[in-house]
Image (cartoon, rainbow over all chains, first blue to last red; front, side, top):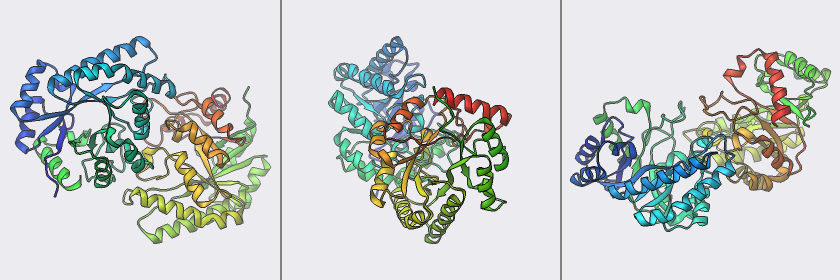
Length: 270
Length: 270
């Protein structure tokens, strides 16, 4: 029987709630951890956000999102690296062990070059990550985002990048939505092994009607989440399982009811 | 300098035109070949369609689309195989050397099982393909179609299927739209080698606003088509290059003007 011990929810999932509300609601529901989107830290000192988490007995699993390393402009690439340093510091301040990287893509930058920007960007951040004690978690994004969100699109490719830059402060966040289709999924999860430091869940709807905000609640779609979980846990991963759902449809629901649905779906389908 | 000698257009691209009109217009514009969608053969004997092509000096490169091997119902899977036999016969009747396979996917069928249905379906059709003298061209589809259109999503996976079933009557149709994002693109095209029997072009728009019908004209998007062409031709491929565009936006244009734009885009960006 599944339970909530490893359940975490990304603040974006319950977008209607600010951080104080999300903390109160998650804690009340018995969800022990969360993924914090950076926007949820705005408007108050980091120490105050940290205190909010602590007062509710909540753990920040991840700070979302860093990355965005790709640009035709060297100046913008440097600005992105600087921003990632701030992001790592914020993560450290709220006790999050990892920053999730949306690595970046730009239709004006050919993919091989974009991938070079990403590898170089990550490599250059490793000393800062080590100093902050925070991992850089590469999240391979679905190939439908290869034009403008991420040129890193498979677990295998993430493993290759880590093999190049070193694994001590760089890991992989496996998001079911982005990787479920991969014909090499089982093999590449095995190869990634202990590089896997995060596991995100939601579901893929048929039909999907929006490129960004039409994800499904676990069990609503066609992803074999228990199968994927077995593969990920086969590597030794026993960390939090993060519910990350973008959905115009679900965001319209009453948020308390929706939190109940998330928990029921997590218990039944993950 | 590029020319039209290897240019082919899929009848769906100029959707406003029936087969007689498309034949007349393509021939007049100097386009020597076409990809025939099966709907364009309806309503007249196959011999008459063949005569239309011959009278205009046009070659049918491909018949589009066979496949759809995946279903939870064994009866439906058998029906699909029977339909593919008819499709192979139609291709032979109009002189098309290949049937393009949209291999099929179904949200109710787990991907590993779907992929088994596909491999078995293709294998079972090989004797009929040999008898018809028509190749089965596996077209790996973009991973965003893995839920309900095709569980074959990469060139590498297509090569693996062919290694399993045999290469004499089975090949790969490489469509830029479906494969451009692949981090292993160069390596997998090399490995596919002479299995590649078709090459389709269009472009990926940013943003893409529809999952099916928002493809771009070559040069409108971010795909490195000359780079992809070099990779494909590096395998020895010297066949027709098929323009296959689904676009609500472009379908609204005046079709004569649009054909001119297609040709200009082909000459400049492929």
